[in-house]
Length: 278
Length: 250
Image 1 (cartoon, chains in turn yellow, brown):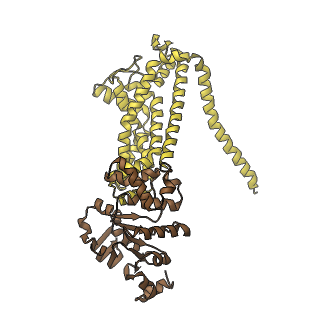
Image 2 (cartoon, helix red, strand yellow):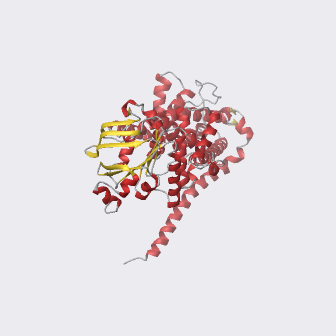
Image 3 (tube, chains in turn purple, orange):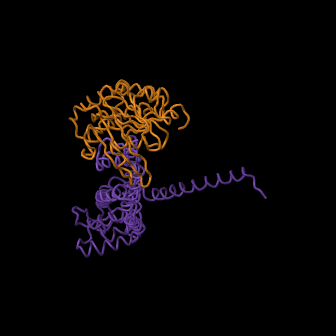
């Protein structure tokens, strides 16, 4: 029996529609629940004041600062390192066993669960290198964790730059490095920024790797050797130890809003970069 | 001044096992337009690319014989200086995906030429040389990729002029353009030959006949015939040349 293709068409269309709405629907439900439960507890005082009684009272100011410090510092470390690797892989090597090995290493690194990064960071940075639970140990662990994302997105962005542009640059007697610096990287900027933004999102949302390395001190981290906690860790501890569900949801609201803010900012920067370079 | 801006002596080029140029003895006169014609795959672009060492960018290329730029051996010239002296315009217009101004100052930046303050003047002068100044002087900060194909190609020529080359290599510069744009680029070439030596590779025989002073005909890696354009097109000495220009093949 042959089913009328028009009928199948309609069915497929409907199915795909449902799938798309399903994804958006889940997002909306999650955000709605968090806002419904957390928004009444969120205000400027909550954002700007210090926690009291293990977080049962007061605000989340130190964890906001801790989140920003962690994300910013690990991006500052991982971006040059990752971009450098990507440039090396795309511009300075030919496909060989060696590059396959590096790429395999990068992909494996991307597949490791974050708790293992936490464990490694704990054993290596915290214990072996005697950093203790500290912002520094957290940043270094997070850097290793986001490195694969930055390498892979940058590599793809660089590969997408037409070879012709490099040839033109050479014909204008630019050297290889000048060509990379002045043509290839600028043309690849939108893709590179995407990787950086994804990585910031990951750093902001991470808990497992952070608890083990940065610790969970409620104080404001004032130096690299201070322990501290990020919003995600704060949320986890409040909820996990039953300290205060209200404060946990309040934290979640701030966390979700900041991720939203980062995405909007990323979108804005990316559009500017695309407008300038394409 | 020497009469030949570019010259080759028994030039052979191999891509791996493929013998792409065979014992080519070729000259390009200063301040004139020399055209290279011939069917696809005859080696004319390969020959052109020898002069600014663009073939170096490909793997597995082997070159034998001598190439001279103004009586100086190609190997003795530093590659950066060579490519500054011998500029190139490609088949497809290929501005960088930046603004018009960024495109124009790229070469200046790379060579650290002049002061930032003097750049604007150089940009204006070079845009003027290609007849784009009026068109683009208010659009310097718009993306170059938004321009029409012809304007893009002119911009590429102007971008090249900023680094003050002596010799300009044109690799089928009009093949992506419509007939009117082609005519304008041809007029531009004729203006430019007052100050520059031009070598152009073209598929279009009429183009060679219209703009060039000298023409070389290539076939299967051989430079079959070289001479004044009027002679090549009216009384070719080699019957293969005659066959090509009368459209018997190619």
